[in-house]
Image (cartoon, rainbow, N blue to C red; front, side):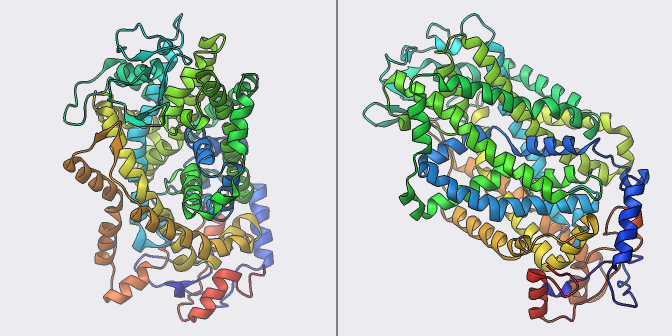
Length: 640
Protein backbone atom coordinates (compact mmCIF):
# COMPACT_ATOMS: atom_id res chain seq x y z
CA UNK A 1 0.00 0.00 0.00
CA UNK A 2 2.92 2.32 0.56
CA UNK A 3 3.92 2.05 -3.08
CA UNK A 4 1.54 4.63 -4.50
CA UNK A 5 3.22 7.83 -3.34
CA UNK A 6 2.65 10.40 -6.05
CA UNK A 7 2.97 14.12 -6.44
CA UNK A 8 0.05 16.01 -7.96
CA UNK A 9 -2.66 14.58 -10.19
CA UNK A 10 -4.10 15.58 -13.52
CA UNK A 11 -6.59 13.08 -14.92
CA UNK A 12 -9.52 13.33 -17.29
CA UNK A 13 -11.92 10.45 -16.63
CA UNK A 14 -12.36 8.00 -13.78
CA UNK A 15 -11.77 4.90 -15.91
CA UNK A 16 -8.54 6.08 -17.51
CA UNK A 17 -5.00 5.72 -16.19
CA UNK A 18 -3.41 8.86 -14.77
CA UNK A 19 -1.51 11.00 -17.24
CA UNK A 20 2.10 11.48 -16.23
CA UNK A 21 3.64 14.87 -16.74
CA UNK A 22 6.45 14.86 -19.30
CA UNK A 23 9.09 16.53 -17.17
CA UNK A 24 8.11 14.37 -14.19
CA UNK A 25 8.27 17.40 -11.93
CA UNK A 26 6.36 19.21 -9.24
CA UNK A 27 5.43 22.84 -9.07
CA UNK A 28 8.53 24.97 -9.40
CA UNK A 29 9.06 28.13 -7.41
CA UNK A 30 7.65 30.42 -10.08
CA UNK A 31 4.47 28.33 -10.25
CA UNK A 32 3.96 28.63 -6.50
CA UNK A 33 4.65 32.36 -6.46
CA UNK A 34 2.27 32.90 -9.37
CA UNK A 35 -0.42 30.82 -7.70
CA UNK A 36 -0.04 32.61 -4.36
CA UNK A 37 -0.17 35.97 -6.13
CA UNK A 38 -3.36 34.90 -7.85
CA UNK A 39 -4.93 33.89 -4.56
CA UNK A 40 -4.02 37.14 -2.85
CA UNK A 41 -5.34 39.20 -5.72
CA UNK A 42 -8.62 37.32 -5.80
CA UNK A 43 -9.25 36.91 -2.07
CA UNK A 44 -7.95 33.33 -2.10
CA UNK A 45 -10.10 32.22 -5.01
CA UNK A 46 -13.10 33.18 -7.06
CA UNK A 47 -16.73 33.05 -6.01
CA UNK A 48 -17.20 29.77 -7.89
CA UNK A 49 -14.39 28.19 -5.87
CA UNK A 50 -16.46 28.68 -2.71
CA UNK A 51 -19.95 27.92 -3.98
CA UNK A 52 -20.59 25.84 -0.83
CA UNK A 53 -19.95 28.87 1.37
CA UNK A 54 -17.12 30.59 3.21
CA UNK A 55 -16.52 31.70 6.78
CA UNK A 56 -16.94 35.47 7.15
CA UNK A 57 -13.60 35.68 8.98
CA UNK A 58 -11.00 33.47 10.65
CA UNK A 59 -12.31 34.16 14.14
CA UNK A 60 -15.70 32.62 13.35
CA UNK A 61 -13.99 29.43 12.20
CA UNK A 62 -11.73 29.21 15.25
CA UNK A 63 -14.61 29.85 17.65
CA UNK A 64 -16.73 27.23 15.88
CA UNK A 65 -13.98 24.61 16.11
CA UNK A 66 -13.30 25.42 19.76
CA UNK A 67 -17.01 25.22 20.52
CA UNK A 68 -17.18 21.88 18.69
CA UNK A 69 -14.26 20.40 20.64
CA UNK A 70 -14.99 21.84 24.08
CA UNK A 71 -18.08 20.24 25.56
CA UNK A 72 -19.65 19.24 28.84
CA UNK A 73 -17.23 16.32 29.07
CA UNK A 74 -14.44 18.81 29.75
CA UNK A 75 -16.22 19.68 33.00
CA UNK A 76 -17.71 16.41 34.20
CA UNK A 77 -15.09 13.88 33.08
CA UNK A 78 -11.60 15.42 32.98
CA UNK A 79 -11.45 16.68 36.61
CA UNK A 80 -12.61 13.30 37.86
CA UNK A 81 -9.93 11.51 35.83
CA UNK A 82 -7.28 13.82 37.23
CA UNK A 83 -8.38 13.03 40.77
CA UNK A 84 -8.51 9.27 40.15
CA UNK A 85 -5.21 9.00 38.27
CA UNK A 86 -2.54 10.75 40.25
CA UNK A 87 -3.75 14.34 40.52
CA UNK A 88 -1.37 16.77 38.86
CA UNK A 89 0.75 13.83 37.65
CA UNK A 90 -2.10 12.89 35.28
CA UNK A 91 -1.37 16.06 33.33
CA UNK A 92 1.88 14.51 32.08
CA UNK A 93 0.28 11.65 30.08
CA UNK A 94 -2.67 13.87 29.16
CA UNK A 95 -0.60 16.57 27.49
CA UNK A 96 1.78 13.97 26.07
CA UNK A 97 -1.05 12.32 24.17
CA UNK A 98 -2.51 15.71 23.33
CA UNK A 99 0.80 16.54 21.64
CA UNK A 100 1.56 13.25 19.82
CA UNK A 101 -1.99 12.07 19.00
CA UNK A 102 -4.61 14.77 19.42
CA UNK A 103 -2.79 17.61 17.66
CA UNK A 104 -1.61 15.51 14.64
CA UNK A 105 -5.13 14.15 14.06
CA UNK A 106 -6.61 17.62 14.48
CA UNK A 107 -4.12 19.12 12.01
CA UNK A 108 -4.68 16.27 9.55
CA UNK A 109 -8.46 16.71 9.43
CA UNK A 110 -8.34 20.49 9.16
CA UNK A 111 -5.81 20.26 6.32
CA UNK A 112 -7.80 17.58 4.52
CA UNK A 113 -11.03 19.55 4.66
CA UNK A 114 -9.48 22.87 3.66
CA UNK A 115 -7.55 21.36 0.73
CA UNK A 116 -10.48 19.48 -0.77
CA UNK A 117 -13.22 21.99 0.01
CA UNK A 118 -15.74 19.18 0.47
CA UNK A 119 -17.38 17.45 3.42
CA UNK A 120 -16.33 14.18 5.04
CA UNK A 121 -18.65 12.31 2.69
CA UNK A 122 -16.51 12.89 -0.41
CA UNK A 123 -13.10 13.79 0.95
CA UNK A 124 -12.26 10.09 0.64
CA UNK A 125 -11.83 10.50 -3.10
CA UNK A 126 -8.13 10.40 -2.32
CA UNK A 127 -8.59 6.63 -1.82
CA UNK A 128 -11.85 5.44 -3.46
CA UNK A 129 -11.53 1.90 -2.09
CA UNK A 130 -12.15 3.33 1.39
CA UNK A 131 -14.85 5.78 0.36
CA UNK A 132 -17.09 4.03 2.88
CA UNK A 133 -15.23 5.77 5.71
CA UNK A 134 -17.09 8.93 4.72
CA UNK A 135 -20.40 7.15 5.18
CA UNK A 136 -19.14 5.86 8.53
CA UNK A 137 -18.54 9.44 9.63
CA UNK A 138 -22.02 10.41 8.49
CA UNK A 139 -23.60 7.57 10.49
CA UNK A 140 -21.53 8.50 13.54
CA UNK A 141 -22.67 12.12 13.28
CA UNK A 142 -26.30 11.04 12.91
CA UNK A 143 -26.23 8.80 15.99
CA UNK A 144 -24.44 11.49 17.97
CA UNK A 145 -27.09 14.07 17.02
CA UNK A 146 -29.74 11.54 17.92
CA UNK A 147 -28.79 10.88 21.53
CA UNK A 148 -26.49 13.71 22.65
CA UNK A 149 -29.32 16.26 22.44
CA UNK A 150 -30.75 14.73 25.62
CA UNK A 151 -27.99 16.35 27.66
CA UNK A 152 -29.37 19.74 26.59
CA UNK A 153 -32.92 18.58 27.37
CA UNK A 154 -32.06 17.57 30.93
CA UNK A 155 -30.15 20.81 31.49
CA UNK A 156 -33.13 22.82 30.18
CA UNK A 157 -35.36 21.18 32.78
CA UNK A 158 -32.94 22.29 35.50
CA UNK A 159 -32.70 25.78 33.98
CA UNK A 160 -36.48 26.29 34.04
CA UNK A 161 -36.69 25.10 37.65
CA UNK A 162 -33.85 27.45 38.60
CA UNK A 163 -36.26 30.39 38.33
CA UNK A 164 -38.54 29.07 41.11
CA UNK A 165 -38.55 30.90 44.48
CA UNK A 166 -36.86 27.86 46.04
CA UNK A 167 -34.74 25.36 44.11
CA UNK A 168 -36.77 22.12 44.00
CA UNK A 169 -33.68 19.91 44.36
CA UNK A 170 -32.94 21.51 47.74
CA UNK A 171 -36.18 20.34 49.40
CA UNK A 172 -37.65 17.02 50.52
CA UNK A 173 -41.32 18.06 50.61
CA UNK A 174 -41.99 17.60 46.89
CA UNK A 175 -44.43 15.04 45.52
CA UNK A 176 -41.60 12.97 44.01
CA UNK A 177 -39.59 12.70 47.26
CA UNK A 178 -39.40 9.48 49.26
CA UNK A 179 -39.16 9.03 53.06
CA UNK A 180 -35.41 8.44 52.60
CA UNK A 181 -34.84 11.95 51.26
CA UNK A 182 -32.31 14.12 53.13
CA UNK A 183 -32.13 17.83 52.36
CA UNK A 184 -29.32 18.95 54.64
CA UNK A 185 -25.74 18.08 53.81
CA UNK A 186 -24.70 17.99 57.45
CA UNK A 187 -27.62 15.76 58.44
CA UNK A 188 -27.18 12.91 56.05
CA UNK A 189 -25.19 9.74 56.48
CA UNK A 190 -24.60 9.09 52.80
CA UNK A 191 -24.16 10.83 49.51
CA UNK A 192 -25.69 9.50 46.33
CA UNK A 193 -24.13 10.16 42.97
CA UNK A 194 -25.41 9.58 39.47
CA UNK A 195 -25.53 5.80 39.59
CA UNK A 196 -24.84 4.69 43.16
CA UNK A 197 -24.78 5.69 46.83
CA UNK A 198 -21.78 5.61 49.14
CA UNK A 199 -22.39 5.31 52.87
CA UNK A 200 -20.06 6.89 55.39
CA UNK A 201 -18.46 3.52 56.17
CA UNK A 202 -17.45 3.16 52.52
CA UNK A 203 -20.07 0.56 51.57
CA UNK A 204 -21.39 1.08 48.07
CA UNK A 205 -25.06 0.32 47.54
CA UNK A 206 -27.42 0.49 44.61
CA UNK A 207 -29.51 3.59 44.07
CA UNK A 208 -32.53 1.28 44.25
CA UNK A 209 -31.87 0.50 47.91
CA UNK A 210 -34.55 1.87 50.19
CA UNK A 211 -32.80 1.82 53.59
CA UNK A 212 -30.19 4.46 52.83
CA UNK A 213 -30.56 8.22 52.94
CA UNK A 214 -30.73 9.84 49.52
CA UNK A 215 -30.08 13.49 48.81
CA UNK A 216 -32.85 15.73 47.56
CA UNK A 217 -30.84 16.53 44.42
CA UNK A 218 -30.51 12.82 43.63
CA UNK A 219 -34.26 12.28 43.98
CA UNK A 220 -34.98 15.34 41.85
CA UNK A 221 -32.82 13.83 39.10
CA UNK A 222 -34.18 10.29 39.28
CA UNK A 223 -37.80 10.81 40.33
CA UNK A 224 -38.65 14.11 38.64
CA UNK A 225 -36.35 14.73 35.67
CA UNK A 226 -36.03 11.13 34.52
CA UNK A 227 -39.00 9.53 36.30
CA UNK A 228 -37.17 6.37 35.39
CA UNK A 229 -38.79 2.98 35.35
CA UNK A 230 -37.25 -0.29 36.54
CA UNK A 231 -35.64 -1.04 33.18
CA UNK A 232 -36.06 -1.45 29.44
CA UNK A 233 -38.78 -4.01 30.06
CA UNK A 234 -40.95 -1.20 31.45
CA UNK A 235 -40.38 1.58 28.94
CA UNK A 236 -43.38 3.64 30.01
CA UNK A 237 -44.73 6.61 28.08
CA UNK A 238 -43.59 9.94 26.67
CA UNK A 239 -43.06 12.49 29.44
CA UNK A 240 -44.14 15.92 28.35
CA UNK A 241 -41.83 17.76 30.73
CA UNK A 242 -39.00 16.25 28.61
CA UNK A 243 -40.72 16.25 25.22
CA UNK A 244 -41.38 20.01 25.35
CA UNK A 245 -37.76 21.04 26.05
CA UNK A 246 -36.68 18.50 23.42
CA UNK A 247 -38.79 20.39 20.89
CA UNK A 248 -37.41 23.70 22.13
CA UNK A 249 -33.85 22.38 21.79
CA UNK A 250 -34.37 21.36 18.17
CA UNK A 251 -36.09 24.65 17.33
CA UNK A 252 -33.10 26.44 18.82
CA UNK A 253 -30.67 24.34 16.78
CA UNK A 254 -32.71 24.94 13.63
CA UNK A 255 -32.66 28.70 14.13
CA UNK A 256 -28.91 28.64 14.67
CA UNK A 257 -28.12 26.38 11.71
CA UNK A 258 -30.80 27.15 9.13
CA UNK A 259 -28.37 29.20 7.02
CA UNK A 260 -25.37 26.97 7.60
CA UNK A 261 -22.09 28.66 8.45
CA UNK A 262 -23.61 32.10 7.87
CA UNK A 263 -25.74 31.68 10.99
CA UNK A 264 -23.30 29.47 12.92
CA UNK A 265 -20.56 32.06 12.53
CA UNK A 266 -22.66 34.66 14.31
CA UNK A 267 -24.03 32.41 17.06
CA UNK A 268 -20.60 31.14 18.16
CA UNK A 269 -19.61 34.59 19.35
CA UNK A 270 -22.04 33.94 22.20
CA UNK A 271 -22.04 30.15 22.62
CA UNK A 272 -18.24 29.73 22.41
CA UNK A 273 -17.23 32.73 24.54
CA UNK A 274 -20.00 32.73 27.16
CA UNK A 275 -18.80 29.53 28.90
CA UNK A 276 -15.38 31.07 29.58
CA UNK A 277 -16.95 34.17 31.10
CA UNK A 278 -19.19 32.05 33.31
CA UNK A 279 -16.37 29.66 34.22
CA UNK A 280 -14.34 32.61 35.45
CA UNK A 281 -17.28 33.91 37.46
CA UNK A 282 -17.72 30.48 39.05
CA UNK A 283 -14.01 30.23 39.82
CA UNK A 284 -14.01 33.57 41.61
CA UNK A 285 -17.08 32.53 43.58
CA UNK A 286 -15.74 29.06 44.28
CA UNK A 287 -12.45 30.34 45.70
CA UNK A 288 -14.38 32.25 48.36
CA UNK A 289 -16.09 29.10 49.70
CA UNK A 290 -14.84 27.27 52.79
CA UNK A 291 -13.06 24.07 51.80
CA UNK A 292 -12.29 25.31 48.26
CA UNK A 293 -8.54 25.26 48.91
CA UNK A 294 -8.65 21.64 50.09
CA UNK A 295 -10.60 20.67 47.00
CA UNK A 296 -8.15 22.32 44.62
CA UNK A 297 -5.15 20.82 46.43
CA UNK A 298 -6.75 17.39 46.17
CA UNK A 299 -7.23 18.04 42.45
CA UNK A 300 -3.63 19.11 41.82
CA UNK A 301 -1.56 17.13 44.37
CA UNK A 302 0.63 14.89 42.19
CA UNK A 303 1.11 11.20 42.85
CA UNK A 304 3.87 10.29 40.42
CA UNK A 305 3.76 6.63 41.43
CA UNK A 306 0.47 6.37 39.51
CA UNK A 307 2.36 6.97 36.25
CA UNK A 308 3.72 3.44 36.53
CA UNK A 309 0.22 2.08 35.89
CA UNK A 310 -0.68 1.54 32.24
CA UNK A 311 -4.34 2.24 32.98
CA UNK A 312 -3.49 5.88 33.75
CA UNK A 313 -1.88 6.34 30.34
CA UNK A 314 -4.82 4.62 28.64
CA UNK A 315 -7.28 6.92 30.41
CA UNK A 316 -5.26 9.94 29.27
CA UNK A 317 -5.17 8.74 25.65
CA UNK A 318 -8.91 8.05 25.56
CA UNK A 319 -9.73 11.41 27.17
CA UNK A 320 -7.62 13.32 24.63
CA UNK A 321 -9.17 11.42 21.77
CA UNK A 322 -12.79 11.93 22.77
CA UNK A 323 -12.24 15.48 23.99
CA UNK A 324 -10.93 16.85 20.68
CA UNK A 325 -13.52 15.07 18.54
CA UNK A 326 -11.67 13.74 15.48
CA UNK A 327 -13.32 11.03 13.34
CA UNK A 328 -16.79 12.54 13.73
CA UNK A 329 -16.40 14.49 10.50
CA UNK A 330 -17.04 17.88 12.05
CA UNK A 331 -13.46 19.14 11.74
CA UNK A 332 -13.26 18.22 8.05
CA UNK A 333 -16.63 19.79 7.35
CA UNK A 334 -15.91 23.08 9.11
CA UNK A 335 -12.44 23.37 7.55
CA UNK A 336 -13.94 22.84 4.08
CA UNK A 337 -15.44 26.35 4.34
CA UNK A 338 -12.01 27.94 4.88
CA UNK A 339 -10.06 30.04 2.43
CA UNK A 340 -7.56 27.87 0.60
CA UNK A 341 -4.43 29.47 2.04
CA UNK A 342 -5.65 29.68 5.65
CA UNK A 343 -2.98 28.72 8.20
CA UNK A 344 -4.44 25.45 9.48
CA UNK A 345 -1.37 24.64 11.59
CA UNK A 346 -1.91 27.78 13.63
CA UNK A 347 -5.62 26.98 13.97
CA UNK A 348 -4.88 23.43 15.11
CA UNK A 349 -2.42 24.66 17.75
CA UNK A 350 -4.85 27.30 19.03
CA UNK A 351 -7.86 24.98 19.18
CA UNK A 352 -6.01 22.07 20.81
CA UNK A 353 -4.50 24.44 23.37
CA UNK A 354 -7.96 25.87 24.07
CA UNK A 355 -9.39 22.39 24.62
CA UNK A 356 -6.61 21.33 26.98
CA UNK A 357 -6.75 24.64 28.85
CA UNK A 358 -10.52 24.42 29.27
CA UNK A 359 -10.26 20.92 30.73
CA UNK A 360 -7.56 21.97 33.17
CA UNK A 361 -9.23 25.28 34.02
CA UNK A 362 -12.60 23.62 34.56
CA UNK A 363 -11.05 21.38 37.19
CA UNK A 364 -10.39 24.37 39.45
CA UNK A 365 -14.05 25.40 39.28
CA UNK A 366 -15.40 21.91 39.88
CA UNK A 367 -13.10 20.98 42.76
CA UNK A 368 -13.40 24.31 44.54
CA UNK A 369 -17.12 23.57 44.85
CA UNK A 370 -16.58 19.86 45.61
CA UNK A 371 -14.18 20.84 48.39
CA UNK A 372 -16.88 23.07 49.83
CA UNK A 373 -19.48 20.32 49.51
CA UNK A 374 -17.22 17.78 51.25
CA UNK A 375 -16.48 20.18 54.09
CA UNK A 376 -20.16 20.92 54.65
CA UNK A 377 -21.06 17.22 54.61
CA UNK A 378 -18.10 16.10 56.69
CA UNK A 379 -17.07 13.61 54.00
CA UNK A 380 -13.89 12.84 52.10
CA UNK A 381 -13.53 14.57 48.73
CA UNK A 382 -13.17 11.22 47.00
CA UNK A 383 -16.61 10.26 48.33
CA UNK A 384 -18.22 13.38 46.87
CA UNK A 385 -16.58 13.62 43.45
CA UNK A 386 -18.09 11.59 40.66
CA UNK A 387 -17.88 11.48 36.88
CA UNK A 388 -20.44 11.97 34.14
CA UNK A 389 -23.88 13.63 34.36
CA UNK A 390 -23.99 12.93 38.09
CA UNK A 391 -21.39 15.64 38.67
CA UNK A 392 -23.23 18.28 36.65
CA UNK A 393 -26.80 17.30 37.46
CA UNK A 394 -26.64 15.97 41.03
CA UNK A 395 -23.54 16.96 42.97
CA UNK A 396 -22.96 20.46 41.59
CA UNK A 397 -26.65 21.58 41.79
CA UNK A 398 -26.71 20.39 45.38
CA UNK A 399 -23.73 22.59 46.20
CA UNK A 400 -25.33 25.54 44.39
CA UNK A 401 -28.44 25.20 46.50
CA UNK A 402 -26.34 25.98 49.60
CA UNK A 403 -24.89 29.21 48.22
CA UNK A 404 -26.32 32.70 48.76
CA UNK A 405 -28.56 33.67 45.82
CA UNK A 406 -28.77 30.04 44.65
CA UNK A 407 -31.16 30.85 41.79
CA UNK A 408 -28.60 33.20 40.23
CA UNK A 409 -25.78 30.66 40.36
CA UNK A 410 -28.06 27.89 39.10
CA UNK A 411 -29.18 29.93 36.09
CA UNK A 412 -25.59 30.85 35.21
CA UNK A 413 -24.37 27.27 35.62
CA UNK A 414 -27.03 25.69 33.44
CA UNK A 415 -26.72 28.41 30.81
CA UNK A 416 -23.04 27.52 30.65
CA UNK A 417 -23.84 23.82 30.15
CA UNK A 418 -26.35 24.64 27.41
CA UNK A 419 -23.76 26.78 25.62
CA UNK A 420 -21.21 23.97 25.78
CA UNK A 421 -23.73 21.38 24.60
CA UNK A 422 -25.19 23.35 21.73
CA UNK A 423 -21.75 24.20 20.33
CA UNK A 424 -20.84 20.52 20.15
CA UNK A 425 -24.16 19.81 18.47
CA UNK A 426 -23.46 22.44 15.79
CA UNK A 427 -20.43 20.63 14.39
CA UNK A 428 -21.94 17.16 14.08
CA UNK A 429 -25.26 18.46 12.76
CA UNK A 430 -23.55 20.55 10.08
CA UNK A 431 -21.55 17.45 9.12
CA UNK A 432 -24.80 15.58 8.58
CA UNK A 433 -26.48 18.44 6.70
CA UNK A 434 -23.41 19.20 4.58
CA UNK A 435 -22.97 15.54 3.68
CA UNK A 436 -26.50 15.43 2.26
CA UNK A 437 -26.12 18.67 0.29
CA UNK A 438 -22.79 17.48 -1.12
CA UNK A 439 -24.50 14.25 -2.15
CA UNK A 440 -27.28 16.20 -3.89
CA UNK A 441 -25.85 19.67 -4.75
CA UNK A 442 -29.28 20.95 -5.79
CA UNK A 443 -30.26 20.93 -2.13
CA UNK A 444 -27.75 23.71 -1.40
CA UNK A 445 -30.30 26.23 -2.63
CA UNK A 446 -32.79 24.86 -0.12
CA UNK A 447 -30.67 24.93 3.04
CA UNK A 448 -33.49 26.01 5.34
CA UNK A 449 -35.99 23.26 4.33
CA UNK A 450 -33.23 20.62 4.45
CA UNK A 451 -32.18 21.72 7.94
CA UNK A 452 -35.80 21.76 9.08
CA UNK A 453 -36.52 18.27 7.76
CA UNK A 454 -33.45 16.82 9.48
CA UNK A 455 -34.41 18.48 12.78
CA UNK A 456 -37.97 17.14 12.62
CA UNK A 457 -36.79 13.64 11.74
CA UNK A 458 -34.32 13.40 14.61
CA UNK A 459 -36.84 15.01 16.96
CA UNK A 460 -39.28 12.18 16.29
CA UNK A 461 -36.53 9.58 16.73
CA UNK A 462 -35.61 11.22 20.05
CA UNK A 463 -39.03 10.65 21.64
CA UNK A 464 -38.07 7.22 23.11
CA UNK A 465 -35.40 9.00 25.18
CA UNK A 466 -38.14 11.08 26.83
CA UNK A 467 -39.97 7.99 28.08
CA UNK A 468 -39.57 6.46 31.52
CA UNK A 469 -37.04 3.94 30.27
CA UNK A 470 -35.24 6.50 28.14
CA UNK A 471 -32.22 6.81 30.42
CA UNK A 472 -31.51 3.10 29.99
CA UNK A 473 -31.66 3.49 26.22
CA UNK A 474 -29.38 6.53 26.43
CA UNK A 475 -26.83 4.63 28.52
CA UNK A 476 -26.96 1.67 26.13
CA UNK A 477 -26.40 3.81 23.04
CA UNK A 478 -23.63 5.84 24.65
CA UNK A 479 -21.89 2.72 25.99
CA UNK A 480 -21.71 0.79 22.73
CA UNK A 481 -21.69 3.56 20.16
CA UNK A 482 -18.91 5.75 21.58
CA UNK A 483 -16.61 2.87 22.43
CA UNK A 484 -15.10 1.52 19.24
CA UNK A 485 -16.22 2.98 15.91
CA UNK A 486 -14.58 6.39 16.28
CA UNK A 487 -11.26 4.76 17.17
CA UNK A 488 -11.52 2.61 14.04
CA UNK A 489 -12.27 5.64 11.87
CA UNK A 490 -9.34 7.62 13.28
CA UNK A 491 -6.94 4.74 12.74
CA UNK A 492 -8.08 4.25 9.13
CA UNK A 493 -7.91 7.98 8.48
CA UNK A 494 -4.36 8.28 9.77
CA UNK A 495 -3.12 5.07 8.15
CA UNK A 496 -4.61 5.82 4.73
CA UNK A 497 -3.21 9.35 4.61
CA UNK A 498 0.24 8.22 5.76
CA UNK A 499 0.77 4.99 3.83
CA UNK A 500 -1.79 4.73 1.02
CA UNK A 501 -2.17 8.30 -0.15
CA UNK A 502 1.31 9.01 1.17
CA UNK A 503 2.44 11.39 3.89
CA UNK A 504 4.87 12.98 1.43
CA UNK A 505 2.12 13.71 -1.08
CA UNK A 506 -0.12 15.04 1.69
CA UNK A 507 2.66 17.36 2.85
CA UNK A 508 2.98 18.64 -0.72
CA UNK A 509 -0.75 19.38 -0.69
CA UNK A 510 -0.29 21.37 2.51
CA UNK A 511 2.60 23.24 0.91
CA UNK A 512 0.36 24.10 -2.02
CA UNK A 513 -2.04 25.75 0.44
CA UNK A 514 0.40 27.39 2.82
CA UNK A 515 3.61 27.75 0.80
CA UNK A 516 5.67 25.53 3.15
CA UNK A 517 5.85 21.94 4.29
CA UNK A 518 4.56 20.92 7.73
CA UNK A 519 7.19 20.09 10.39
CA UNK A 520 8.70 16.61 10.22
CA UNK A 521 7.18 15.92 13.66
CA UNK A 522 3.74 15.55 12.07
CA UNK A 523 5.04 13.13 9.44
CA UNK A 524 6.40 10.85 12.15
CA UNK A 525 3.17 11.07 14.14
CA UNK A 526 0.95 10.37 11.11
CA UNK A 527 3.09 7.45 9.98
CA UNK A 528 3.99 5.82 13.28
CA UNK A 529 3.12 7.27 16.67
CA UNK A 530 -0.56 8.14 16.19
CA UNK A 531 -1.75 4.98 14.36
CA UNK A 532 0.22 2.71 16.72
CA UNK A 533 -1.27 4.48 19.75
CA UNK A 534 -4.78 4.18 18.32
CA UNK A 535 -4.30 0.50 17.55
CA UNK A 536 -3.02 -0.25 21.06
CA UNK A 537 -5.87 1.77 22.59
CA UNK A 538 -8.44 -0.15 20.54
CA UNK A 539 -7.00 -3.53 21.56
CA UNK A 540 -6.96 -2.60 25.26
CA UNK A 541 -10.53 -1.29 25.04
CA UNK A 542 -11.65 -4.60 23.53
CA UNK A 543 -9.77 -6.55 26.21
CA UNK A 544 -11.24 -4.52 29.06
CA UNK A 545 -14.75 -4.46 27.66
CA UNK A 546 -17.52 -4.95 30.21
CA UNK A 547 -21.30 -5.15 29.71
CA UNK A 548 -23.18 -1.93 30.55
CA UNK A 549 -24.98 -1.31 33.84
CA UNK A 550 -26.94 1.62 35.19
CA UNK A 551 -28.09 2.38 38.72
CA UNK A 552 -27.93 -1.25 39.79
CA UNK A 553 -29.87 -2.34 36.68
CA UNK A 554 -28.35 -5.14 34.62
CA UNK A 555 -29.29 -5.07 30.97
CA UNK A 556 -30.99 -8.19 29.58
CA UNK A 557 -29.18 -10.35 27.06
CA UNK A 558 -31.30 -9.07 24.15
CA UNK A 559 -30.36 -5.47 24.99
CA UNK A 560 -26.67 -6.37 24.92
CA UNK A 561 -27.15 -7.99 21.53
CA UNK A 562 -28.86 -4.86 20.23
CA UNK A 563 -26.02 -2.78 21.67
CA UNK A 564 -23.45 -4.82 19.79
CA UNK A 565 -25.46 -4.41 16.61
CA UNK A 566 -25.52 -0.66 17.18
CA UNK A 567 -21.73 -0.67 17.60
CA UNK A 568 -21.36 -2.49 14.27
CA UNK A 569 -23.81 -0.34 12.26
CA UNK A 570 -21.36 2.55 11.60
CA UNK A 571 -18.80 0.05 10.25
CA UNK A 572 -21.21 -1.62 7.77
CA UNK A 573 -20.80 1.01 5.01
CA UNK A 574 -17.06 0.31 4.78
CA UNK A 575 -17.21 -3.25 3.32
CA UNK A 576 -20.37 -2.48 1.32
CA UNK A 577 -18.79 0.46 -0.47
CA UNK A 578 -15.61 -1.54 -1.01
CA UNK A 579 -17.58 -4.27 -2.79
CA UNK A 580 -19.45 -1.65 -4.82
CA UNK A 581 -16.26 0.11 -5.94
CA UNK A 582 -14.48 -3.12 -6.83
CA UNK A 583 -17.52 -4.39 -8.74
CA UNK A 584 -17.72 -1.28 -10.92
CA UNK A 585 -13.99 -0.93 -11.59
CA UNK A 586 -12.33 -2.44 -14.67
CA UNK A 587 -9.58 -5.00 -15.09
CA UNK A 588 -8.51 -7.95 -13.03
CA UNK A 589 -9.09 -8.03 -9.30
CA UNK A 590 -5.53 -6.89 -8.53
CA UNK A 591 -5.74 -4.13 -11.14
CA UNK A 592 -9.01 -2.90 -9.64
CA UNK A 593 -7.53 -2.80 -6.14
CA UNK A 594 -4.47 -0.90 -7.33
CA UNK A 595 -6.60 1.54 -9.28
CA UNK A 596 -8.96 2.15 -6.35
CA UNK A 597 -6.04 2.85 -4.01
CA UNK A 598 -5.13 5.83 -6.20
CA UNK A 599 -6.99 9.15 -5.98
CA UNK A 600 -9.98 9.51 -8.29
CA UNK A 601 -9.91 11.81 -11.31
CA UNK A 602 -11.80 14.61 -9.57
CA UNK A 603 -9.58 14.63 -6.48
CA UNK A 604 -7.45 17.69 -5.88
CA UNK A 605 -7.52 21.26 -4.61
CA UNK A 606 -10.92 22.87 -4.92
CA UNK A 607 -9.44 26.13 -6.22
CA UNK A 608 -9.77 26.14 -10.02
CA UNK A 609 -6.41 27.86 -10.54
CA UNK A 610 -4.61 25.01 -8.75
CA UNK A 611 -6.81 22.15 -9.88
CA UNK A 612 -6.03 22.87 -13.54
CA UNK A 613 -2.35 22.25 -12.89
CA UNK A 614 -2.59 19.42 -10.40
CA UNK A 615 -0.02 16.99 -11.82
CA UNK A 616 0.66 13.31 -11.27
CA UNK A 617 3.80 11.28 -10.92
CA UNK A 618 3.12 7.56 -10.71
CA UNK A 619 5.78 6.07 -8.48
CA UNK A 620 4.23 2.66 -7.90
CA UNK A 621 7.58 1.15 -8.87
CA UNK A 622 9.32 2.81 -5.94
CA UNK A 623 10.90 0.45 -3.44
CA UNK A 624 9.36 0.02 0.00
CA UNK A 625 12.47 1.51 1.57
CA UNK A 626 12.24 4.68 -0.53
CA UNK A 627 8.53 5.00 0.18
CA UNK A 628 9.09 4.72 3.94
CA UNK A 629 11.92 7.24 3.79
CA UNK A 630 9.93 9.77 1.73
CA UNK A 631 6.85 9.49 3.95
CA UNK A 632 8.80 9.85 7.19
CA UNK A 633 11.49 12.34 6.25
CA UNK A 634 10.42 13.76 2.88
CA UNK A 635 11.83 13.29 -0.60
CA UNK A 636 14.86 15.11 -1.97
CA UNK A 637 12.48 17.62 -3.60
CA UNK A 638 10.84 18.46 -0.28
CA UNK A 639 13.57 19.53 2.14
CA UNK A 640 12.67 19.63 5.80
